[in-house]
Amino acid sequence: MTSDAKDSLPATAGSPPQASALAAWDGRSIVLVGLMGVGKTTIGRRLAQRLGLAFTDADAAIEEAAGQNISEIFAQHGEAYFRDGERRVIARLLEEGPQVLATGGGAFMDPSTRAKITARGISVWLKADLDVLMRRVGKRSTRPLLKNDNPRHTMERLMSERYPVYAEADITVESEEGPHDAVVDNIIRKLEGLKIGSQGGAA
Image (tube, rainbow, N blue to C red; front, side, top):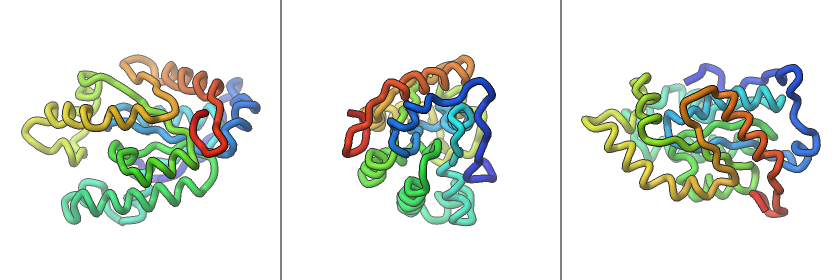
């Protein structure tokens, strides 16, 4: 987790966002969804820099509000307590204006949160295959849902449960091995071609 929930970064020289695209997004936040290990925080930071927007890590904001890290919240209070806090924090963040918002893997599964993202944001599903995800999550030991004897099986179950819901996102972008900037380029290309409906979300 990052220590700062929100960072404001200057746009990279020579790569400002298209003004027409920004206007078309109608002040909505770009909300990254997907499983743990897919790269939402790393890619989100680079995307925010390219677009000249602030970057917010929802998990870091939850930790800041709770005064505990995610593992401690899960261990002491359980997943239901964490999801309730996650729901409230993301709702608040979506009211704070356009930004790039990286959400936890389970956030988009909540119908209330998903509806708020549809109304106030543009959802981007970062999708990766199982082997890529397992290589990435293996680098960290702070994933509460993977603290068991068979984390690969857990990840397979999460993919089965969550991918059909993630597929409701406005945009889907593959996040495979390779330069993160290539993923950012792909997101921006798709954002520039997106039309926003009057009720939110992609038209």
